[in-house]
Picture 1 (cartoon, rainbow, N blue to C red):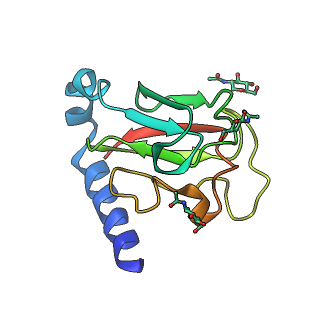
Picture 2: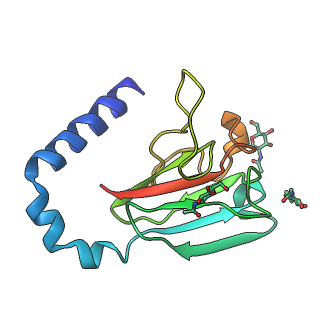
Length: 130
Ligand SMILES: *[C@@H]1O[C@H](CO)[C@@H](O)[C@H](O)[C@H]1NC(C)=O
Ligand SMILES: *[C@@H]1O[C@H](CO)[C@@H](O)[C@H](O)[C@H]1NC(C)=O
Ligand SMILES: *[C@@H]1O[C@H](CO)[C@@H](O)[C@H](O)[C@H]1NC(C)=O
């Protein structure tokens, strides 16, 4: 776990050091990334919604998924999402932060957030290029 976190930190640092120009140039294609499957149940059971979302944009989760999603599964593209406990623009009152952290295609519990106690938390999310 520690290894993957530091790898992510390094990847992120390298990506930011690589600079904004690459990012700006490719931003149009990159905005086509961002497909996420959200379902009430684990293993994509129950009501599901699949959409493509713009990167670097906060989306409020709406009913019936608001604080009620056990599946949060990003596509296997080069992006990750931060699911948040509060709505877009909301204040985080928790000292531990209010996000599950970076969830990408390779996130182990994306098909069962109840396994990590996050099945009744997601109120909003924002995805970023990786
Ligand atoms: C939560 O999800 C369940 C299905 O798992 C659904 O029946 C229920 O209506 C949802 N609740 C809300 C408040 O959206
Ligand atoms: C998300 O919901 C909050 C709280 O209802 C609202 O203030 C905010 O404008 C919404 N933002 C978006 C992007 O929908
Ligand atoms: C999801 O995880 C919970 C907690 O570990 C477990 O009880 C449940 O059976 C799992 N659900 C599925 C569909 O695998």
